[in-house]
Amino acid sequence: MPPLSPAMQHMRGAAAAWAVGDRAVERMRDGADIIHLGIGDPDLDTPEGIRRALIRAVDDGRTHYSPLAGEPATREAIAAHAERLYDVPVSPEAVAVGGGAQGALFAAMLA
Image (cartoon, rainbow, N blue to C red):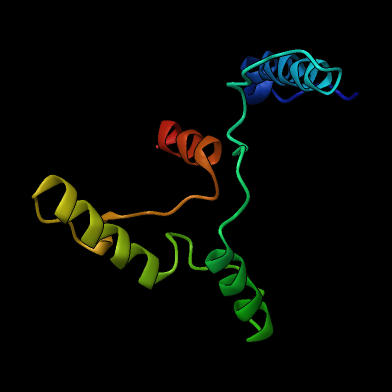
């Protein structure tokens, strides 16, 4: 493997965390009773409504990248939910949607 750039040297240890998770999955396949608290892969199937919406989106040709901060309708729905939940005004412009917790947390830390 080629050497990592100096900017990436400090991240070298992250691969070990994935190795632990991989080992846990192997042991679970072998029947070990393990509660896996590693990567955020849910232990439930994607709800039918979400699956159907995905199929509709693909059928409608929505197969390209979304806006960087997320789809406007999604950001509006999240803002409205946060307003109800926390009883404070939240504008959709203050909401960003990430492609998963790890990527979103990484982006937030870089910011």
